[in-house]
Image (tube, rainbow, N blue to C red; front, top):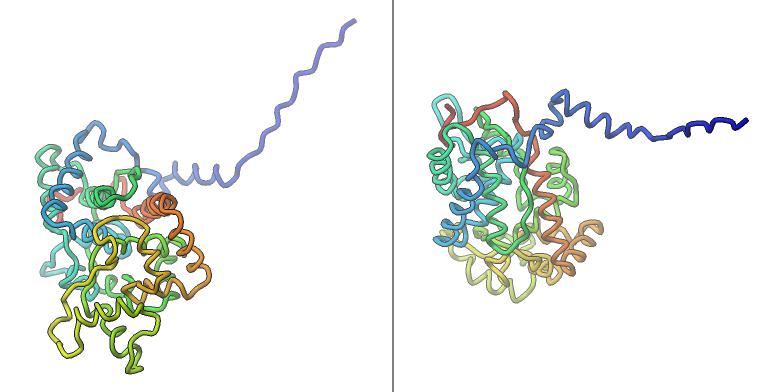
Length: 338
């Protein structure tokens, strides 16, 4: 008599973290609101969206190459203050002081008109459908790509906030004068990490800075009566010519953050740091900490890895503190709530 073969027992491992993640997503847990984002969020409701945004950014860059860095900075200054909700785009009202005139933004943040124009084009095609924050997130990606950086996919479905906070902007936006530890703490408070500090600082491969953000490095660094000893001597001479100490009216004059490839998104920023040619104190400070210094060296050698990892950090940034579902609103105009 032949004994029946027993059915084999299938063993499997339960992935507790993954099950927890899925459960939180299904429950719409506020800490994981980005679970509700989707690459095809506007596929049916606004299929031309990405093309409209890309064309708007391209047109703006053709008119002013500086605008690519300005849009990227606009996105960062939005997300780092209480999350990505397009609050930075709101004008002041009788009842609310917005973020545009906070210390880090006043007379320096640019690109509002570009987002306004794109939003107007989007509204013509898809009325009351696409949030200003999603437009800004896409525009930041396209600004990088059109400047020579790598493409990354953007999930969509964020909703706009209904208020802004100038006090939070003053407190939460990193300053070029702050120690690296302070800057890192501001990043980690948003769920980012020290690697993101290094990668997102690399956005300074394009754009300009005003004299007042680095002038103290040129003549009287930290009250020493001398220039910053960590500043390349050739760069020092050029900057002293651009921002002379005798001229107290030139604080808004501009110098390129990366004088080698001014408008190209690449890894030369990190090569500049290794040559002591970082324009801002917060840039050059990345060589002080061994952890960040090793990453600077790595990205200076491997440009593809930098642009690839930069995209990953931008995805993390664009998911900070977002509103989805029934939270927030879809603003008809980016400068004001409905």
